[in-house]
Length: 221
Ligand code: GAR
Image (tube, rainbow, N blue to C red; front, side, top):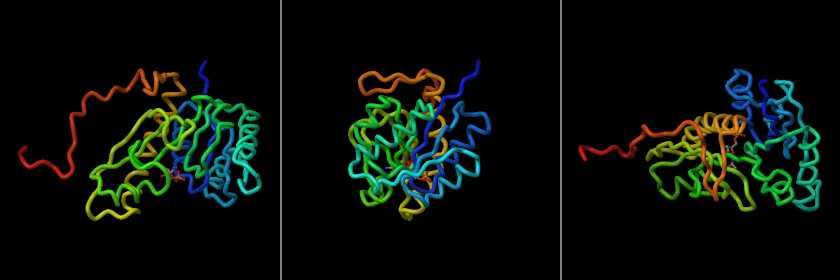
C-alpha cells in the first residue's frame, strides 16, 4: 500500500518553497503529506498559501519564549502531536537548538540559497555576489547542531553574471530551489537515502552525464 511521508514545514516568509512542495504533492510527484505548517512570523505569506490548500497551520512567535530551547520544545510538541516524521525547514529564519535536533535525529532538512559550505548564514546571495564567484546555487542538507553545516543531500548550480543584482541572482537560485527540495523529500519518502559519516548516499538519480561547465564559456580550450 502507498504510504505518504508525514511532514511538518517550518516557515517564516513568502513560502514559495512550501508552494512547490504543495504543488508536487498535489500533482502526485511527491509522496508526502503536510500535517502542519508552523510559522514564527504571524504575517508570513506562507500561512496564506497553506490555508488556501486547507493545510493546518500554527503560529509560534519566538518572542513569546525566553529561550531558544523553550521555543523549540513548543514546536516539537506540535510536530509530534501531528505525527510528523520529517521536519522541512523552508525559509525558516531561526537557528534551532539541540531540543529540536534530538527530537528528530537526521529527520530535519533545510534549504540554503548557496553552494554550501560556501556562504552559510544570512544573505547568502549577497555574500556570493560580493565575493565574485562565477557560480552559485542552492543546497538541501540535513540539519545538525551547527548553522548550515549538516550532510548535503542535493545541490543545484546556477551561473552568476556580471550584471546580476541580489534580486536577479536570488530569483535564478529560487527556481532551482523549487526543483531540488521536492526531489530531496521524495528521496527521503522512498527511503533512498543513507548517511555514512557525513556523506549522503542516494540509491537513485546518479548524475554521470555531466562533464563540466564553465562561466564564462571557454573559447577553444
Ligand atoms: C529561500 O531562498 C531559502 O533558501 C532561504 O530563504 C528563502 C525563503 O523563500 N533560506 C535561507 O536563507 C535559510 N538560511 P520562500 O519563503 O519563498 O521559500
